[in-house]
Each structure stands twice: as C-alpha cells, then as structure tokens.
Length: 203
Image 1 (cartoon, one colour):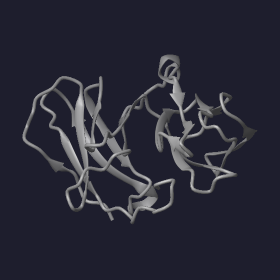
Image 2 (cartoon, helix red, strand yellow):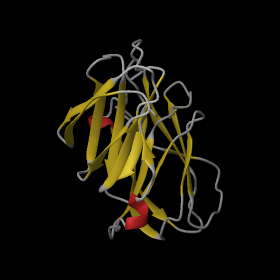
Image 3 (tube, one colour):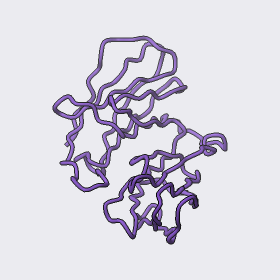
C-alpha cells in the first residue's frame, strides 16, 4: 500500500524538485530512490554514466545500502575490509558473481538493464544492498532526513517514481504524475514499510 503525495506549501523554483519521503508515522525514510521521467522520454548520455558509482565493502557491510545508477553505468566494488568477500546477485536485472577477493582489491560490473539488483556476499549472509538501475538521467536518493532534490528537470509533463526496498507498494514503487514548471511545488511521499531486518545488513 502506498499513499499519494502530500503537497507542501507552494515554493517557486526553476527546474529543481525537492522531495521528502516519510513513513506513515511521519519519520524520514533514507535510501529512497527518486526518479523523474518526462512523458516525451529522456536520453541517458555518457556524462550521466560516468559516475563514479561505488558500493564498498566496509565493516562487514555494503556502503551504501542503496545505490541508484543510470542503465549502462559501471559500479566499482572495492573491498576495504581485512577479510575477503564474494559479491553476487541472482536478480533478473543482473545476475553476476565477483569471486572471492581480499583487502585493497576492487572489482567492477556494468549494469545495462533497468530494474532492482539485490546484492549479497556469498561468505557473509548478513551483508545485503541494492542497486537500482534506472532509465532516466534524472535521479537521486534521500538522505537521513528523507530529503532529496531532483535537479535540472525539463518543463512539461512527466512521472516521479519513488522506490524503497522495504516499501509494501507493488515492486516497491510509488508513481505520481506531475507537471514541471516554475510554479511547481515540493512533494512529500508517505510510504508504508515492512519491518526492517535485525540482521547486520539492515534491509
């Protein structure tokens, strides 16, 4: 279940869209992916794919727990721990394995298909993270206060989509149609979330 966005007090801005994501109790939801796709479509350029995009292995966890990248981008997976890790995913959007490697070594993987890629460590089951691969150059991720800003949006009609790994909405996605112009207003989304795992991976 997902609730419709609540419009905050009008604030005029040019081409930036502030977004806040809260749970149903009003607490901020970090690590929420927010994307905007114009109705006329959008092209992902080489500069959008450049990154760098990184999911590090630190303190027996993946950092960050959620990464958003444009389709066609490459993600680096450096091991900053003193123990070895074996990074993998069985997700339909990208099945891959980065066999066991140790401290100071980095591996990389290109992600061509849109979708959600759940990653884990074959040695340490508590390690878990998500890579959200999107088909638009307009994307961001909420901070600890549940806030994010979509920057440099073109005027016109489009769709804002919010995704979180714990959202109870179908596929974790909540979609909202919007018209972007100088009078557009910031948006707040309220999401119903599943209970967070107590395992070391967090999600």
